[in-house]
Length: 527
Image 1: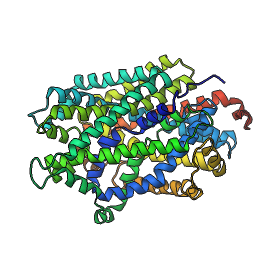
Image 2 (image 1 turned 90 degrees about the horizontal axis):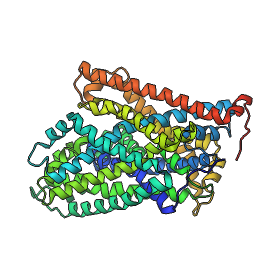
Image 3 (image 1 turned 45 degrees about the vertical axis):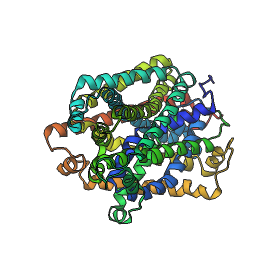
Image 4 (image 1 turned 60 degrees about the horizontal axis):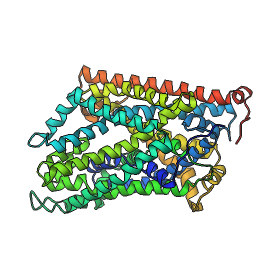
């Protein structure tokens, strides 16, 4: 078996995994999810989901990835196939391999198609903060003008894409590891400096508006709001856990595949979760909402929604002493966070070309560049952002939980719970308590079944499948026009095509190496 690239250092691995998890989800998505789901009401189901979903699925994905890496695989299709054949004949295991490969390809490519755009916005706003381009202007209109400026959008998105291509093209130890060793410490430094600034703002506009009030909104449990919207807030919290920890994407499996067979996954998985939660809850939670509370007041801060980072906060920076520097620091923080996560999705796709299709890594890197450019172009050209919203609706939450569910079904149930428990503890410095085993075997998949059924029922109820007027106007919040409906249908066609390509790719990757097994329907290759 040919030698695969490995992580050069334990620190490099932990920083890469943390960089993978710490992304725009922590500093852009978390604050607006908090704001739109009742602040303290959101934090209760958030921590429940972290314990019963986040940590178990994180360990399952690390274990699956390291197991697949032992066989020379860095993509999900062959990994699922190998684990599923512990309970099923190869032909039955092939079905789960195809499902895993199909979903991972769809998530990593489609999420990248719009996630990289948002990273591009961060690059643009870093420049606009330094030059004071939005100072003295209506920040909402400034943002709308920017996304309608195709040349500017493509320029900043393109710069981000090229730098990603360079980082990933250099390989795991010489490329990804080196980039995250610089970016991750800087990200933490910027975040801590911004938090200190946020918490020392006082009440610059009105005595009753302060950053501390923002912290109170986040950390005061709101049981009334939770009771009134229990299911909706719980779904949002679980979706945020999957998004922020990069679960259900195939990319943790990919990074873990570069481990040695005895490298610890228990402690590494916990370290990843801990670094991510510190960045999200302590740093991310102490930035956008408290700053917005101090300058915009509670009402506008809570209404900030998706645009909180790009529409509400620029309004704050223009009135803040040293606003240009703090604004540039905030958006550069977002760019670093997005970039270190984007490296992981990019690397997953390159691994498909390199290992499954045997294409040279450097060639594969630029083939992925072309693929992601073509997939991202409709997002860049749509100033309404309806195409992006529709992709995020399905890929950014539903598919993540669906793939997470199959993680448990394949990695624990089909691989067999005792095999999984033994594999999890190989080379482990600490043992996972025995009482946590039922959480991984029973509670996590049950939790996800409830989420998926609840989500599906919500989609049916709001007419998502039929693109009803209520879905377009109330859920996506767009006018019900032929143009918007056309963009939604276009997004769905692209999702379907990518799923089909992902299924074919996974089938070919498995058949290439395990063709004889499939023909005889019995296990032959065993490491």
